[in-house]
Image 1: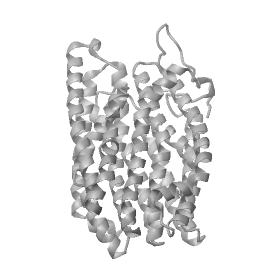
Image 2: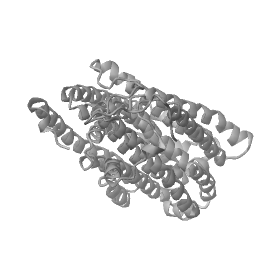
Image 3: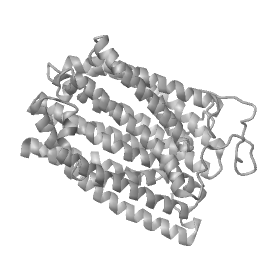
Length: 473
């Protein structure tokens, strides 16, 4: 993706780039903080909520094909999460890099980060696709796919893999656009992809009789369409950050900056995928119905998690911009509001799922046995979901500041807490142990996040009292 235009060159002074002639869509230094956060976060929340809804719609259509179909698609979910890991890592690294340099008025450097991130995404997508395609049968066998699930899972996953490179470019582009404050465009892209996916799902699945492969094909077409919209955005000079071939820089120090901040996000996604794989593996001995039930609970969990993540991603640009500009008062005010919103939403969502678990589960399956298992699974999985808001906020603030090591705190939830639990508890307590592993991991990760949160607020207050010299990287 390259752009060229006579009025978009950056003027340079002796130390920094001055503001380019193309204005930002949103002034990230705006002191009307409530309005600023809402303008950035609401489109991001809507966008990622639409993405979650897209997963739900796919599951509803696929659920009409039977328990084996929804179990097969559910078993593909961790592979999709694993595939998204590279995009999350590159995107988070690029977004942190871009927002901090925009705050420091280093616009050319921000553009170099964006251009380099996209240049890295495409070859990674192609290599991963070619590597995984021939190994899918072995992967599903490891996941515990039964002979009835295996062929359906291969049909779905094989088609999904063909869309991996567009998905990667789509993810990274979204992070770039949101980092410069134009979250509204990202929202419209996701909304367009969702509508297209929802329209094509019944056509491909039922009208063309393609089954689960039709659901994957609908997702593939929607991803390609989203990439096309981002290409239009970049080539029409949609924002402050300019994506052009001449700005691609493979300098080791610049790639290292992108990678260090993005690495914890990538590891979190990888561990999340591994955790879900282990979850399905632990459910497999209890039969196809149990796998389907766990898949339903995981999707409902995702529906609640993505809006919180979207809010943090949308508002994250303010934190990174303030960090680059060393405006600690602005950061503190934004952080307090973000924390209030994330905790309030996660607590309310947790309560709603626990209370209305049965009608929610009935949207996905009319199988009475699957419903019974899924209801109890949903309730236990959401017992401590109220702490997810704290975890998401802490991850966002650390990524915004470019604190790669500390941001690895996000690994707790699906990493060093959940994985040992899901390997051990089902052996001791059967299916109840499987349920407990998720709940206890959520509780432990939330407590760790609270400790880090208080530490970060304390450091920001000290920096505000003593000035920029107190800031550490």
